Image (spheres, protein in one colour):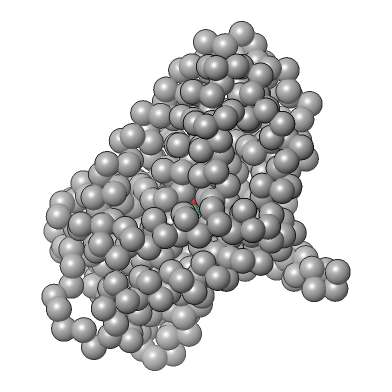
Length: 443
Ligand code: TRP
């Protein structure tokens, strides 16, 4: 076992920036706007808000409580509070880190490539070339480049690597997204984009499918269900205010997701490309929007550069947190040094991304398995763990917090509401996902 003293964030703001960096990523810019437009506009935003408050926020606080309280990586943290029987859940968390980062790195690689395209040549003809950009040796090369940056930052340590990157990158990201939203508002036709994005339709909103998508998105976007937030909280001191931190993290995550949608849709509509929005989540971002940029001429290259730079930055601070789960487990559990852990586990994850870099079908199934099985299942197990197994979670969550109201509600949500909603959703999501896996192997 490594005996070096455990690293800590240099300040509470450093932790919050890193955690917001984990939360804000491709999920906000790529999935949220698409899901909203597809599922009832403002009605979906309200549903998403509700799901985030009812299940996202309690699970986030649960992760922070276990992490800060145990001062350990997820595997050891669950053992600490639950005994050996809970070791496998920690292992599942680490496995989820492998799986998610493997395909997340591939998509991030595309964004890196699009950013470079904006800089060097523009986007003309990109829609015909998407399938070649997204699959094959090129896709793998950019995935490799992205992973190399991620590994280098994680190898640098909690303070000098992760916190420093977040402190520089997160304000930059916010400025870029806000700038894009302002620019988009000035485009002719912006109103139609807003109307499409937020067109309120409550009719489909109470279906199980939409609820499943909202819950899956809440977990993915808040980086919940696999110990990422738990790992970051394990580098916090005892004086941190956890309920407060949870609210700030969730608020920033939702705010940036909403803002990104305000940027994306007016740009698509201003160029009259609205009929091409449907089809796939990836299509809107990597085909329709670049086409819009290409149609704007020189301005489009600048706007496109800012847009894809924002995506790269968001993806990077998220990928860092995914890798850190695996790295911290290797440091604590195997006694490895940080550099070695980052290089070896990051290298293995890069290789695991190869199938996703070769086939969009594989990437899609990996995404479904990660969300519908690992994150929602992990969230269910975690809420049961903190709600029923852990001794006095309220006592631990309360340390550093002011005021005592709300904690018993939190525990009741973890015991009953969160598991029930997640079971309801999983009941539907798991069979469909298994079918998708089966189809992939049968094909
Ligand atoms: N939340 C990130 C996004 O929205 C992705 C992410 C980072 C993540 N760490 C995670 C998702 C842990 C699930 C679990 O892009």
